[in-house]
Image (cartoon, rainbow, N blue to C red):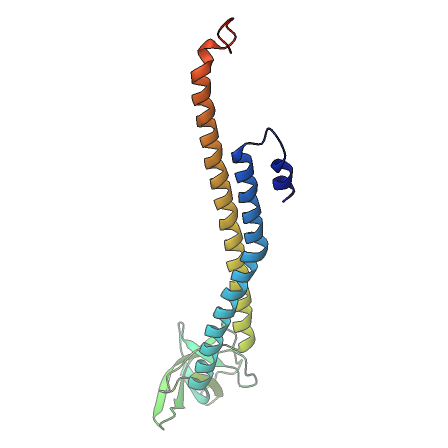
Length: 201
């Protein structure tokens, strides 16, 4: 704004100088006002979608007791430690074949993994299952969903600010190119007579 005010009364001010100042002001307003608004909007929409997904997952997935049948090799689905309601999704857990009962009463058997130190046959563990009784991952909790939404909002704001600055630089660069083109054209017209006596230059 100070640049615009300074150029307004300057006799050597060119139209491109005023245009550059207006472009800079528009970019500044977009970065400090528009980008935060876009970030808040993006984060809010993401949070709404994730919270809806959280509610759906919590309604569709159930913590089901299971019994270890035998040890198994390789990777498997997720199970819970008998003493904890928290799942840690790492690759250091023990894979076992376990049996459990689906919501409709059907007996199910499958390969799962557990953090329990005791994996002998008959050990009771808990696993997450979906509405059909199939093993599933632990449902997302609201706090985790909100954290993802905040990160999405911050990312949206940063992207908007970066795109605005990139656009400003491109516009200014284009203005500079046009200015140099006009200068070259003007110099081409008066250049051959520059400094000659009686040429009126």
